[in-house]
Length: 224
Image (cartoon, rainbow, N blue to C red; front, side):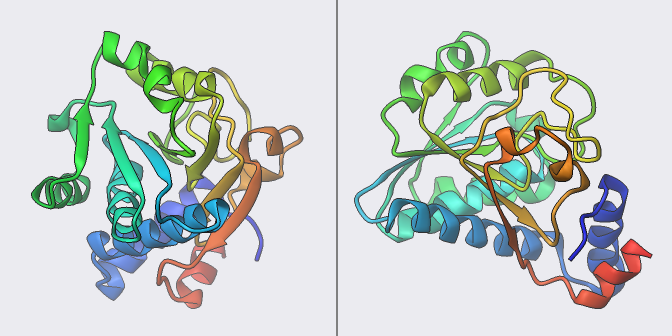
């Protein structure tokens, strides 16, 4: 399947939600479970392993909350670090964060100086999951998101990126500012156009395309 641009991916999501009626929270659940599978595979099983999930305010963060729950159900010790103000979370992301809390998961909302020292906490994890930002990012990262990405890289652990390494441009594959360097990227529906750019593989690592329940004809319509 050929790669998709940022606008084409948005069209796929819009069609799935608005025309077919697949709710966004369902797509998020499917996405999170797929990434949980990929993390468990990378670890050779989740039971007894330590996973750190670094999540932002958007739907990628919501995917991170879902995968944190599923990895914990498989026996992993999961800590979820939220690197954005809770009031900025999308509705579906906030829903899944609330589920994590009701289940008693280890959730830590960080800001400022706490984010600047995040690498110390991540250093003990077997895998770090990058769920900070997604395909909508254009230009160089700023503020807490930029610091979080720098801290993920500084931790020196294997990283699995959710959909796209945070900071990598979806369409061009350019790294204008700090970009997560992942060992594995689990991308949804199709590869992103930027992944094919020279040098992009240094950030994406191995790319796995995950099915999140969007019909093939919807993808085809967005491509045409």
